[in-house]
Length: 154
Length: 275
Image 1 (cartoon, rainbow over the protein chains, first blue to last red):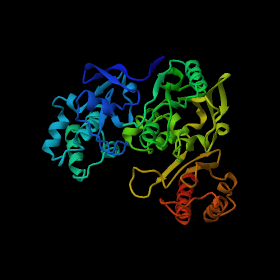
Image 2: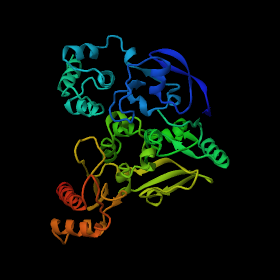
Image 3: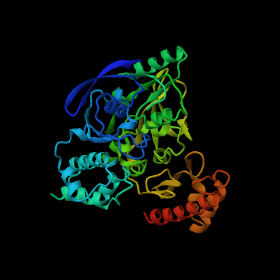
Image 4: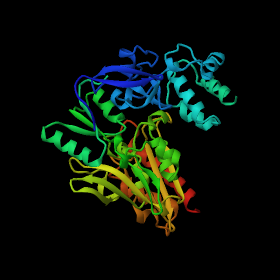
């Protein structure tokens, strides 16, 4: 049985590198990524699972890192926006004006990247279903949808 | 950021989990079983709950099972809503869980967590309330199989230390004609004003509703299937029968909920009567 009590040290696989971090079991993955690993791409928006600005990938599936304990992430592969290396969706967001202020963008990029991995032939229904996990208060979502569609059709 | 510290345990077996709970409880610690954890983390952050430790059930193989056997579909309590939905072994369940929260969170919420949670809707219970199914529960005497209807009364009714391990759904009940309707007040992603799951078996309709009152409820079978009456008369009878249960809150007044329920029932009859 794994058990963590008080201050303890765990190893996390983040962006294909093993990172040693000191945690309390109550720490969320978001806190550890930002405050211990200085990976600030995942944003602390609502911190209640509503906005999606903190979305990262865990084993290639999108997860709101404010709703995951760092302790739960042991043994899993975490990808943050910093780990996306010129992924097609990044260029597509630029070309399709898929962002304005940029606060939500990393979360949207992670969701869209995961969608392109799991459903390269996604239709409008599936795209909408996935995008509904994230909030953007600047764009009208249309540009973001265009961005993901542009890479799915390639 | 969680506002207080707690300990984290991730047992490998059912027995280990149960003993871990007993030990911590004997030390006068408040312990929660943890699976998806979305509700626990949200409530801890808001300081709506306090506890000393969580026992994460995701390391237990039986809780992670999702298998279609000759007799049953076995759904482990730590299966996420996404994996249940994507497997699509049980289309009514797939449809229901794919409308809980949003798509990303569905990858974290587990069926055990949804059934055991404190949020009143527990929509994953709806298909189970109208289906022949059993629950495997870890108890002091080991694993026990209990009809789901006996352990779910508004929410999971388990004794201290017990936890849900699996749900077994009769295979013959998986592919029946069904309807699922979810109505929200404003946005598609929201808690339900009302969610209904209905199905038809051997000519009879069964249906359950969440959001109508303080917990999910099965609609009265006799009134639902009183074919001697016109549909409009049946819906009137059903609403009258449930009148005391229907709540009024910021999402909708009692009168509005009655109006919406009436419309959903008419939609259900239109879909299922010819099925």
